Structure formats: C-alpha cells, structure tokens
Length: 62
Image (cartoon, rainbow, N blue to C red; front, side, top):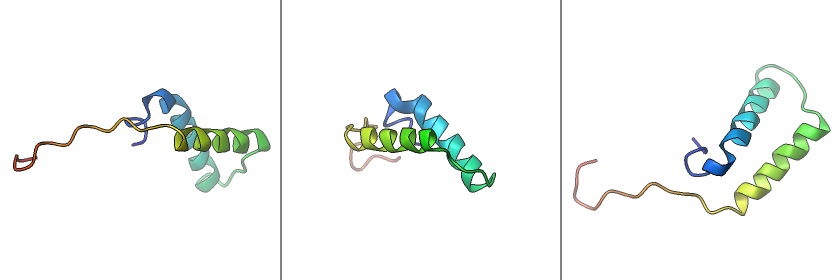
C-alpha cells in the first residue's frame, strides 16, 4: 500500500514487508544490518513527500 505514494522506494518497501513477515510470523530475528536498513528507509520515507492520487471532485460518485 505504501508503494503507490512512494514509488521510488517500492523495492525497499517490499523487502521491508518480507522482513517484517519473517520476524513477526516466521519467528526469525532481524540482524543489525537489516534493522539499520529498516531505520534508514523509515527516515527516508519521513523526509519524502508522498505522491497522492487526486481526489475526485465533490459531488461526483466514487
């Protein structure tokens, strides 16, 4: 869901999601390098303006 507003980070977001699934549901542990990559991605996303889809004009069916 974040790949649309942050297309320049899509590949790294997919990797972060896979890592999350492995840790949360696969009962694995993230290593220091993986944690650092996630923190860097988080910082980059916080500093990046998302590309939002335009809203439909008021009064029109969605």
